[in-house]
Length: 154
Image (cartoon, rainbow, N blue to C red; front, side, top):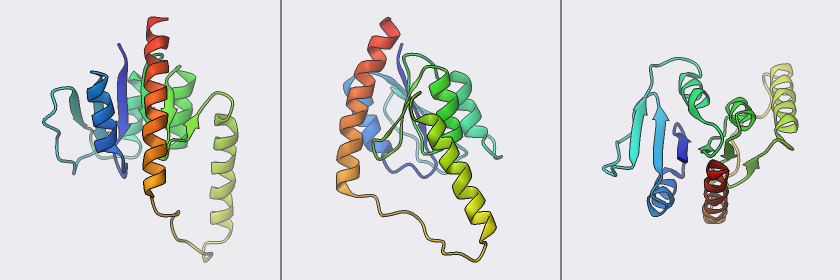
């Protein structure tokens, strides 16, 4: 059975994902180390993991597999889930796939090296999350859930 896993810390599309999961009658696990208001939706399980580096990521990686969908911005978690056969999306709708995950990991490592080499360099986050990003996410999630259901039957 398909499960939708949400790496919930700093995820701006939890409510949208819940609406889509409910429409498809999917179990949804919202995983974080706390600070989230639990959903009253019986299909949504709020999973609170202990504090610690990557504990939520490990919880998801141990469970996600073929026929599941994972929402995360964490590239190492995405790589583990893709390797396990899950379908993985960023919160802006971009998919992590077997074809692009290696490049994503390499770019992440390169950017970490560049930041380490220039500790006084310009910081700042990414661009703001837009309505277009939200719409792109909803469209991509719909496609990935349908494909994951086919994978699960598979």
